[in-house]
Length: 363
Image 1 (cartoon, rainbow, N blue to C red):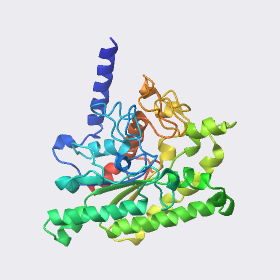
Image 2: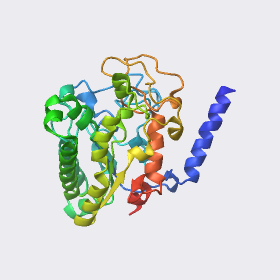
Image 3: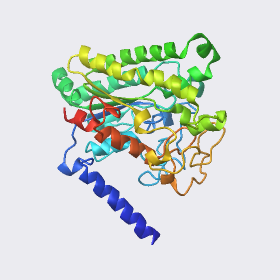
Image 4: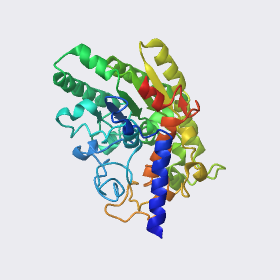
């Protein structure tokens, strides 16, 4: 009976996705020729596996629900938001990690995301090696050269090709949790509003470089409610109406609230630019289980060690779809799917501004 119910539920979900036109590969070709991914552990698919760093999870229970039940280096139990987006865009595979991509694979896209990384180059240095946003962009330059070679070293052909591709950037959490909030010197000398302004300025510069390299369809993610992560709730034990660490959420909101203006400025000032802002604070409303379709938001699904990651090879919770967090920091596959469904399909500007990702892909 349990198996039948589970099969019925999966069938309903698949039918819903097709009905909403969220799964586009039925047409036989992807909506875009390639998809390039920049970010941190929320998008990392194994780049950090080959780095000298504490920020890697190439062990179970991470990946327990990924196809094949294998650990790939993704910081969740299954697929990430960018994996789902690749599927929605019509690809029959998830974008490969920069550190392992081979041959003609580069033509359909690459995942450069690196756990522990940030907008600022020195963010995350406590964990060891990682690719900062600017380093990820440098890695992208090397991939562009490989694409040019495969396309006959024709700059115009490659530029036109890249201009049709999808780009997503989800980064900045570590600039708070792995930098500002961990550094007394930074937080004492730089008020939260100035820290946010510094991040936005650096972010803007990086996105302009990405545009100079050919990017035209770019979605950037807000950070959402970091103060509602189990890591913050368990450590700080906030006595607040929200149940979250409101001070941290306020700090992060100063950054997030600047991103719509950043998107407007980039779209107005840069030729052929189409930048989109994904508002995670509205899409994933903090500590609200009902809105997320889960039951547990304050506790991790897996057994965690001192660093907040799952204890290697420990059994996770059996009911993983009831949890919004897999470990102390990272969402479950269920939460990733919830967020990307809205980013891809929502018609509300408070979710995705100025358009959703399905419309961005078709420009």
